[in-house]
Image 1 (cartoon, rainbow over the protein chains, first blue to last red):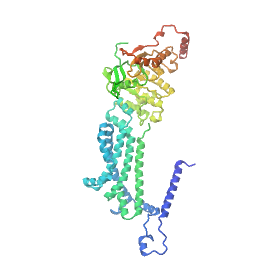
Image 2: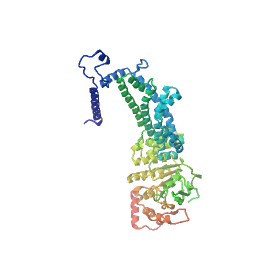
Image 3: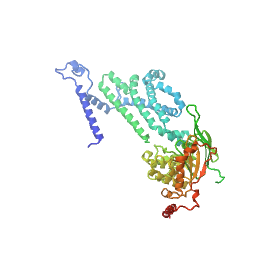
Image 4: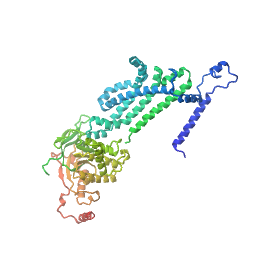
Length: 275
Length: 305
């Protein structure tokens, strides 16, 4: 008997094969009954209707792109690695800037009922705003499309981290606080050696939600600001009518998003504890 | 009794909560007076709701009384302090730290100038005292309830507080585990000569451990009615303490109080609020013992010899 993991892998591979098979089969150009005209040859086949490229073509392109991911042949032709690196740079910069503000501020909100009540209305109004709605204002104030994109990432990552930190800090078990009190720990020591480790799993959950949202938002933001990045790349290839590249970059967005989530999940495991 | 001032004196302590519908305040306990001598082991017994835990929390500095106060070594208790260690019923260990790190946590707070090696050696000594030398690196979630409470006791003793407060430390443990940890508590207490104030619901536990048992009447307006001296020789052992002729006199006295008199006394208004000092065994010193009890007593001496 195979282990559950083994069986799951087999089933997943079967699904993949079926999916790719159907996709491939449904997107073949019709057989040409007669010799192709010169025009048809120019257009790439006897097809009067545009079709989604079959997976065989996408995989061929993927192979080609991934074997040379960092080439740079001008603004309209850069390797997928370069585009992803631009996106990752923006996401991580905005994300860590948000963490730098959200986690200490969340601590304050979580520890002080006064600050919680005072700041809660702001959070409730600002949080539901689509991060892209900030874009025009950011462009106007910052006057730099690159930094505006980073700002959009910053503003969308801040809320889950802020709210989760405040929640985690406010809900640290009172027993642990009392232990800190009976050991005469200073407020700083209490925050550092009791509240932070106690709230860390909740904070990390917020950070994980944030990185997911940031990665969703960067694609849209880069479609708007243009120039570089995976979001720009998707849109640019659509303008080039290169659907192979569009599908390939969609897959790459998924893969990178998954890797980001896995990294955060690994960090959460480090700070997790069992009660 | 000497004129020497007690280590801790609780004076005229009352706790009242405002009533929700503008009636008279709900008085949990009123005019509680306790004196704890240095090195004494005192248990307090009473029904739920009489405010035992509140008294303990006031002693710890974690709660405030409505009136009255606690004086320790001439100073009023205001806020928690390392001089008063607390063991809570639910262990209150940090789940992200191992057993050893939990004890280190207390030791480091108590002796901030110590090096890491000193802290660790000190913690290990106390963990060994409670029989946890092989499981020090486990997290609390990997320990049984009894082992967790041992860690908590080790942490409290390792900080060497002047007064140790135990809030029903064995309340959540099964009887077997409880017995074993009681023995360990006796051992570690007799080595350290700590002053201990402990809440318990278990009459036998109180007799085994305490020098004195304070009996509280039922709330509201609970008070400490009696201070029962446990005049049994030390070291005591669970296995043979019940064979001592005085054991059942004390036990009957305590149980009778809890079952019958704690309710009656609560209703009686009295002007004198210092507890009556009782020694249920003091009438048996000179009188000739009934033969059957003598037999039991002499039997108990033989295996010990």
